[in-house]
Length: 502
Image 1: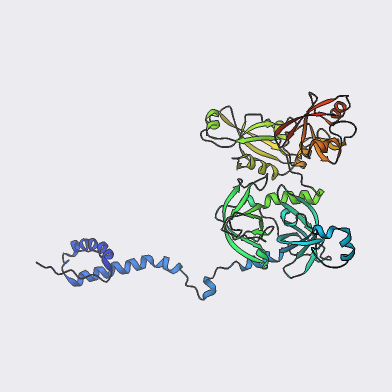
Image 2 (image 1 turned 180 degrees about the horizontal axis):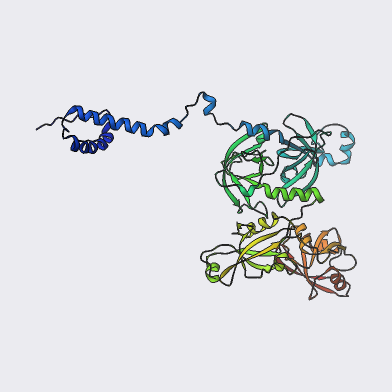
């Protein structure tokens, strides 16, 4: 038997489902639930009550008056920061050789002064970006943008051009500082923001000159912080962003919505050369330290802790009694270092520095380099199964012993080499680990050292069975009369021995 489907209410099944129980309760008091007039009266009361209950929330909603009220724009930020971002063009003269036919003196007599054949030199050009960080014309960019250049031209956003000179550069961090002369006119510049205050998901803008098309702005978010496995720098703690960064953006600005410089764009991860949404920037806190150092002395000197450490993995953490793997364990510590003075010892696990968790040796280096000089920073460490607190004041790496640079000559196997004593300060300047000691080769020009194949950066460990610890001792050993010399050197961590007969 077919039954008639009940008529659907205007308010839908969900509203009726909530009204029917109320009606049944209402009927208990009236005793007339079947009366249509009372049913609709109860329904009207409930609907009006619901509208009145929702009215305060509805009253807070403001309807946009025009399209400008619903438009989100970064134009105010771009208007402030774009004038401080510059384009950098470099030129380099590269000598070229003529074909062998034109090297013949007979032909050169006839071809002299005639622009024929391959020119004697060609001009290589490249482009990049930079950021004005001082009203007097101080500019920061990537070192690889200006590397090997003979001429550097800076173009401002108003199309004015200036020739720039290099104040200093640091190829380990990939930063360089330039200076232009605006004839006393103050230039727009960007102030440094606190890159440690960034969080994943923050909105950022990247400004530069991609592919030479002119100043371009792209937006994105902070994708990750503290990226270290890039092989780009020995102080690796990059900001990762999905804001489009392409060739020519290098050295450009990464800014936050407060119009502050929070990074210098430096690299992308790409298989095609174009942006795929994985770009990296040097944090502003590290940029500030390097810029101050380069401006003060023309070379980068970084704060030093005197610690060599490694990450704590699962096995090490379990052996030490850590609840889970974290921190870095100290492998070596310099006896003249601020870490030693603060009471840190080999085997301690550093958990945090100045409130920032430490999970890798690169993170430890970054926090050391960006720590202020002359200020004791709090350190949390793990020792003997429990946490402990201490404070450490980072310092500039000392030159102890003095470098004592000498040029070797005479009838010995190192004749023609320039050598010096290694120290924490000198090692950092040369890009070596601070724990390296002994005598380092700085230059090889001629003589027996050149024939031996000695290179700059080699560390002389032993000669004729005697360990070498200083240049003075080396001179004494080389002054001995000998027919055969057995020499052991350290080249990039690899030991090499050779027997030399004079």
